[in-house]
Image 1 (cartoon, protein in one colour):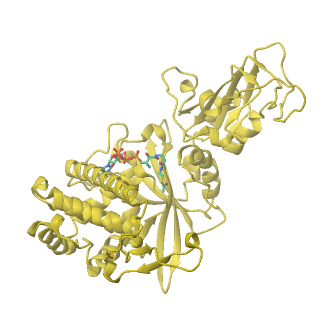
Image 2 (tube, rainbow, N blue to C red):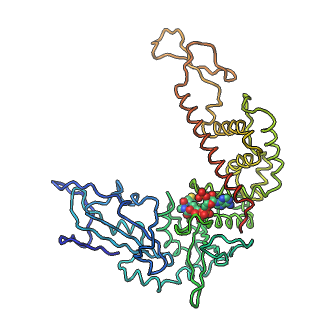
Image 3 (cartoon, rainbow, N blue to C red):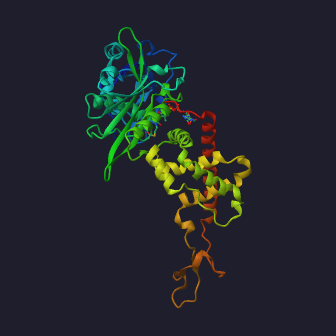
Length: 468
Ligand SMILES: CC(=O)SCCNC(=O)CCNC(=O)[C@H](O)C(C)(C)COP(=O)(O)OP(=O)(O)OC[C@H]1O[C@@H](n2cnc3c(N)ncnc32)[C@H](O)[C@@H]1OP(=O)(O)O
């Protein structure tokens, strides 16, 4: 990591961030997001090349204490280069001058080290050398990994950037030789690109890495590059099963949006089925990843015959009568034996199946426009129960004024009416939040239907699509 000082008044070698008392000039600081640019490069020619565009991390401000700002520098520019083969990094720091104002001078070295840890090197030369000295880093690290999938089986090409035959998914137990070291070099990428993530505990042997690798033919030996990876926790379920929980997944920015995330997820699904775990869940999926996961699961469910009768029956109920006119709308959930079969065969848990179920019904309604009103009532009923919870369904509580010998302001009676019906009293207090609740409910229903339509559209466009 280098610091270039272009002013005559250069500060000491390692400026420390410190609060000053007295009459220091006020310093508005600069947001880390504004002055730091990050570049992922795979060759030394790409370092500094105008053809390489910067990548967008989650939020760099998070790495700077307090308000996410850097203080004490004028004209600060930080370019961080990450070698996507060896995972080393180098920060090129330039500024015009420093001023030790009221917020002190931010210690850039320690802030960057919080993100990049030991992957960051001090000099540009050292960094440039990593392209040759460390070019076999990934290949050496994964040499003990178990190849669980290679290329594609249906002959389709995943995209133009990577030939399918060059793809490999390897699995490593975190305790196996080199896996911990490899993960420690991946941590900066996790911190930078996976929102809200924390590094996994490399001392816990129940963690597994699934690495999506591109093997490119190079002079003598193939060159290995990480396209993406996921960390999965395997844990015990009483009495004799194991469960899998996907906890973080990342496709390197230059490979995103080209089907690699879906590919990796499909391989993980395949492994969960092959190993007959109890189920495979995902820890706090982002909206985008959840959508990808749902698209994949919908395709799997569409090909799963045992649930067809249950879908047909739900569709028949929905198309038979005017549901939206009915006081009580049945909840359109799969029968328990279908839930069980799906979990056992596809490792999709109940929560995820319920999400997919709404989309499966939507896809089966033909023509959809004819049934949209009833379908919307069904989704409204689901959202009401899911989000607003039992309160909405619960018997109505009423507050009634009654004659009292106590202080009138402090006295009231609450009673619960039978069957949730409201009494005729003129003094019933209306829940002040009710109109607000209804408005929020309407918005949530609209959002859910938008999401359902989006996934249904993607599935219809790509179906049938089983790529591995
Ligand atoms: C548990 C967690 O870790 S949650 C956090 C997830 N990770 C991150 O957010 C880190 C940054 N992002 C990433 O690493 C990646 O973008 C990932 C992992 C989220 C996704 O990987 P990518 O390779 O970019 O996704 P992929 O190219 O496979 O899918 C992109 C699109 O194709 C669509 N698609 C994929 N497979 C299918 C399919 N079988 N049928 C229909 N559509 C599909 C997806 O819905 C998605 O569409 P969208 O972008 O409009 O939502």
